[in-house]
Image (cartoon, rainbow, N blue to C red):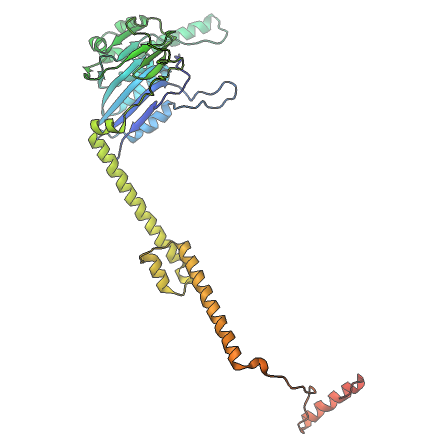
Amino acid sequence: MAEKGIGAPVPRFWNIITAEGADYAVITMYGDIVERVPRDWWTGEEIDGQYITPEDFAEDLERIKDKARIIIKLNSGGGDVYTALAIHNALKALPAHKTVIVEGLAASAASIIMCAGDEVNVYPGSIVMVHGVSGYVNDRLDIFDVRKLARNFDAVERAMATIYAEKTGKAIDEMRQLMNAETWMTGQQAIDQGFADNIIRGEEVEAKLSADKTVLLVAGIGHDIRGCKHIPREIPIGSTAASVTASGKNTEKEATHMTEKELREQFPDLVASIEAQAAASAQKDAAAEERARIRDIEAIASQIADKSMVDAAKYGETPMTAPQLALEAMKAQAALGAQFLGGLKADAEASNADKVQPEANSGYADNGDPESKLIAGATKLYNKMKGRTE
């Protein structure tokens, strides 16, 4: 059921550009359509690149479900048919007016996504291709397995043909005939068959084949076409070996899609909305940071004796954070402590207390009163017992 795509990652496979408050969004879809992120057969690790799954795509569409218009820029050789059906259904469910622009190739499963558009625009050099379901089988099958597989293939083909028939206004059987014949169409031919609605003039879309005819390069993106049987003879072979490589990349010039200048020229309102939203977000973040700074300072203000220092930290010419204020308060307290100790030392030196000598005494005094005499007598007796003399 899955159609094989090129193994090398392709740039900007799937991107949604929008902004809160804008009336429309732009979806760019370049490269292969995959059921899940591919993994290395030996290590089990995900292969680097940008990929899409139906769940991820549905989550992103949730952000733009209320837009009035959606522009879908498409250049894909197809991929997993079930993923394409899921994407088609998700796009069709959106109430927005959907405009699809085939910027290069809409082949195989990608043509299903193309048909989700209420309006499909193509360049003269755009290519649309429809064909029947194919798949790879790496298992041992009996006759019942083969029959079940054939029924599954037939069900998917009916679903695809129904989508094509709804788009073109033609019969399902006629669509299945086109699929069985693997039909390739240029821009005008796609309009003639009902798959597209308008031609975009003034910009050329170039298509080239690799020398071994396994890679089709359209508008700078390489697509693996080894599963295709009826490639149009009109498509030229790349003039140099460097033009199209086996990985499907254009080594002469890296493809660029939807540059800032193009975005500003084609969607000025969208760009203005994005920039206004970014400015508002920056102001909101700055206000939140300021409130947090004041709150943190107030949390430690009760521990700082100098309230003028607290006010200066909050509203002075050089505002401080709570950690900076705490450090400055510690420095000021240390300076006050040093000043206090210095004052004590100066007072002690001025009093000459260090020059006062203590007077010796016997440890008791006989003042003539009975109590003193009793204490003195007891002291003499104790000293006599110890062999001491006065």
